Length: 391
Ligand SMILES: Cc1ncc(COP(=O)(O)O)c(C=O)c1O
Image 1 (tube, protein in one colour):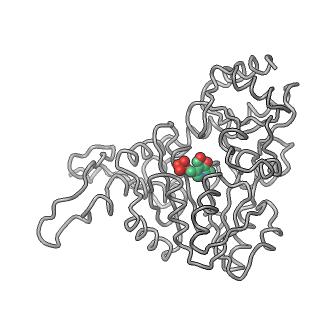
Image 2 (tube, helix red, strand yellow):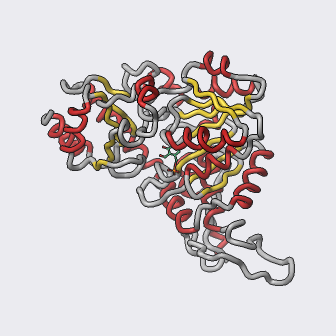
Image 3 (cartoon, helix red, strand yellow):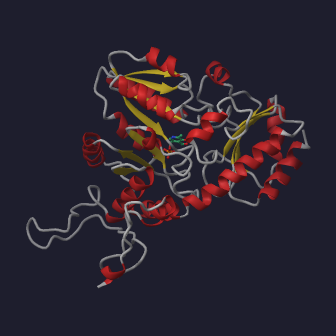
């Protein structure tokens, strides 16, 4: 009966409509408009071999399935698989490789990704080269006959360097290499790598997709049938699944992704402009500023410039003063939540990166990172202003 008011998405449904509705329909048992949290480990079968497509909670869960379909549509992919964390999702991508394979990776990729590749996957005869992927000639030089994957983050954390996604996809495909994009930092509102030719996209859903700093999770979105088949198999075989409650939280988060991202974009740009004009600030890293070396590329491949920015204060003392003086900005790791976070990459997110590597990447002791939330921009500016005045 409820089927008469099921929301049907047209094939040309726009982004906000997809975020709200894709993958979901009223609950068949009650008509509940919100997909329930199917908190169950198993499903009763009607007769031997007769069931509704759900047999065991690790293998299938309706809440997780709704989320996977939702995010696959949001990223423009063919399918998606949700994992217990962003790192579990990247670990699943690693299982697409075989001993002897080689991967080219963005040189200032997330520290946890570097740790997984460098300390775990190298034990399985996989090799990784870390390259500035904003320089595609350098990427091409790093390719070997064994290269199977180009793993890119754009913008990078926290220096906000960009990789040209279309050119990277073309280059990768000329060499029969898959382009994998960790899209956590931008979110699919800001850029959809699959539109530019990426083969796989991954997210820490912990960040913008959930958006409320109350869940840890990850997802992989794919376009190739062979990749999707393997990821589905590995999700069940390894079992690092996203639980039903977390799936539900992220599904609630994606409904407001466009609304939140508009405010993240607008607050990110306003803070970057405010900081650029401040006498205590030596440099601001934000792709939305005309001073950013890849501003033209940012305008081409991003919709808005995101909520992440970093700025240089010149010394650890100055950074410490600001970090200890802010009141509204919360001193915390992570990003992408509705509340504004401030952090010190050199001693927090990038503490495990060796000092010489940090220096080469521009992660100095005076560098401060902000994940702009959705508060009133004047309150954020006032808070930063009083903190900068204490230097
Ligand atoms: C870009 C990026 N990728 C992956 C991850 C890992 O995600 P999680 O912490 O959900 O495992 C993070 C976490 O900060 C991240 O920033």
